[in-house]
Image (cartoon, rainbow, N blue to C red; front, side, top):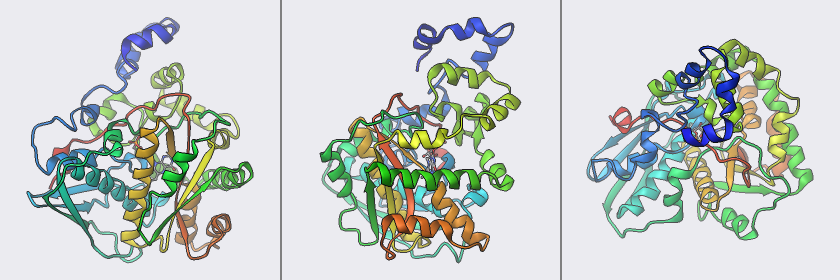
Length: 390
Ligand SMILES: Cc1cc2nc3c(=O)[nH]c(=O)nc-3n(C[C@H](O)[C@H](O)[C@H](O)COP(=O)(O)O)c2cc1C
């Protein structure tokens, strides 16, 4: 939202906040949502100088990643782009095998491939084999060879700058168009190791919501998870502009007035408010969406399959964006699968999610929900291309 709209809609904040409050509001980015260097990559991704393959990297960095860690590095030449994972950019015990970071790399790869076609390249991917359980050092994951091709601009490519994770409430009971559901079902195409499951039935959705909500409470009751996760929470506007990554208050999905209040809250009050929120808030958010989806693979810890899963999520979210729908990942249940494995506990969550999809040949690796938004989602910060090209 720009400053003028804010002042018109919620100007009362400036009256309500006494003394240095107005200054605090400016200082904390209340009037600057989506502005500043951290948000430039969303604006100049098609126009910035440096043509050729760099244009593909500019699209890639606008992809989703866990906690907005942006774990990507790119080695660029005129004929190829290599994708490396920077394993130091991680969320700790929430993702002990870096499975989610690898999925984020798949998201970037999908944007890159959409941009390759739109920029007239014929692009061929070579995936490097690997298993997440064996090594976690920074490594090359894939190489995209580029040759001259036919320029093809898709609706997914055009949706790249508008795709944002939407954590607000969705419009309940507003079913999604059947044409969208069948297109979503067909997104996986010929890829043999990825499958997408879609749930619209209320009873089935409630089961998934209950599993996710319980997983959410359990995983965030571990202080080491909270500590590692908090590393990526950017409440200070100067930090947002400096680090250009992580989860910001603008991305919490709150209405504008609440967003402004939260931005000017002292940190201790924010922490208190976060732990005293309404009961069932997460379940209610999830249930407001008429569709829950599960992306499954044959082997959750296979490197290449993680990248494929990420490509499918990115593609699905771009499709939803192109059709004016909103989407949000909701991965706590799968994170608990990793957590139980890492702590050598019985695989309770793998069993519960396995029951939901009802086919032991497929392993859930990514959960999401979609629907019509009640509020527009904001962009999250991005590091510039210069920081991620090696
Ligand atoms: C593998 C993966 C897991 C994610 N899990 C969650 C999640 O459980 N809850 C959530 O709100 N967002 C989740 N996200 C969304 C990221 O937080 C989001 O992509 C990132 O903050 C960047 O914001 P953007 O998608 O709006 O560009 C996930 C993203 C990825 C790629």
